[in-house]
Length: 108
Image (cartoon, rainbow, N blue to C red; front, side, top):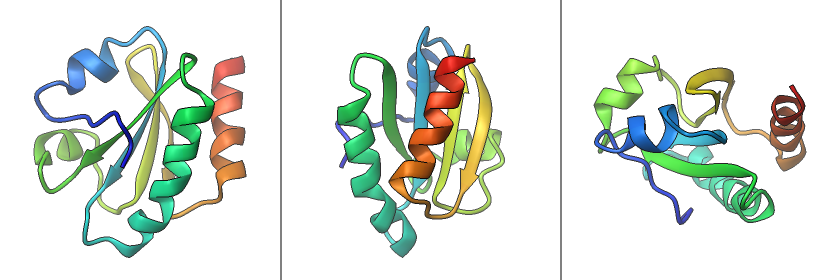
């Protein structure tokens, strides 16, 4: 699991007030596609360490944040910039697709 775990309690401070781009994996332990995406998120967290904050939010344990951002399907990867979600990727995707989206946002 990613070293960075977001919760309803710290989401505002860790994500919405972050000065860096933040990638949040909305997931649940019972979700098979989430378990497929998890190692990809781990790799991205290592690769972008110091440039992008990458973490996970368990939707079962943190329903308020999931509801606030309209998470209806998991895995959902939301990319935040300046405290606002700028990209949503629903469903399992490949590492290169996530990287492409992160790079586009970093460049904007």
